Image 1 (cartoon, one colour):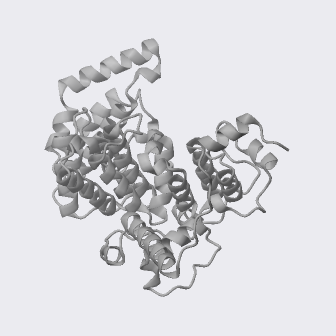
Image 2 (cartoon, one colour):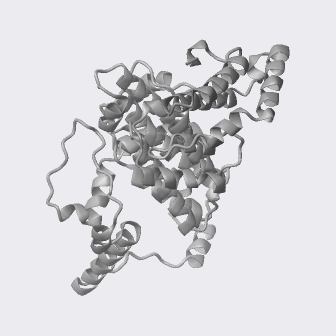
Image 3 (tube, rainbow, N blue to C red):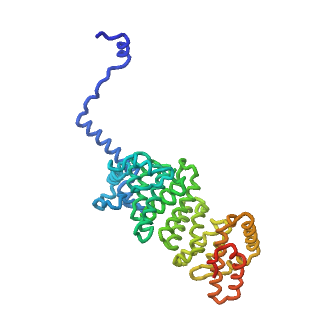
Length: 412
């Protein structure tokens, strides 16, 4: 068939295409060396070289996320190789879940708007949803809630014990990394998800990862955060401390974490007020519900209490309450002054009037609970040291101004 005029024109416009010439053995070796060097350099950039990993003070999390799967038997040296870690992380990633997972028709009904998994093994559903690109932060949060619910219904002696053996925290972290959400820390926008994830991370020994997030929040431009880096720092610090407490840590350990946060903020020139929420959270545990914990050591207690004036501004008598509960030198003077102050009586009368007019929700419950706890602790201390007249005076104040607003079991 004769070629058309148009086809001939096109042939003249475009140059002839040729297959590339085969490479010589030397050229092939050079290309292989270049690719190998580039790949190794990229791994060292992302994961650090062998020397850096050995010197790192932050332990790497285990790479197997299923508790029933035994860890691969490698020598001690092999675990530090970036290539080995990189390949093992890829192979254990939920994105490469087995095709034997439930069908998409099975998964969709279990991942509703709330993301709470029902009627399926949570891990199986999670892995399949990730492999199909269906996973979101809300659904990952639902997965964590489902695992926690199963643990509560199981035979574990404590919730912390169940969380530590679940592997759910590492599974979610692997998804955050594979999906790119960890790159800009955008998942920290969801406070509830962050708090629940942190509970698993602390229980599983993955707390050091949270400190790398905190470091990025003070040193990087985290544009992916809708709430802004400062608010994210505030909540992440609180989540770390809250998770530490919920894991069963005693006041000494929890206070040590707060002191570590203080040193971290000072070192990075971040405002200490960013950790006021975390401090207040633990201060409440150390005062209002101190009976649930063993007494902390004096040095740690004093260092923790000394932070109050520089980071906390809301009017709750933490300073006076901590003075009263000092492990070796309790001082009731501040507590007595607060409880006998005329302004306190005025505030309480105003709260009662609001409650009668608009309902009990208009009473500052935290304030009332804290003052009541302070009063009862003061009465106990004064009675113990033989100051019975002062103890009776404080007790009368509590009965007059607090009992109508609070629960009867708070009485001495």
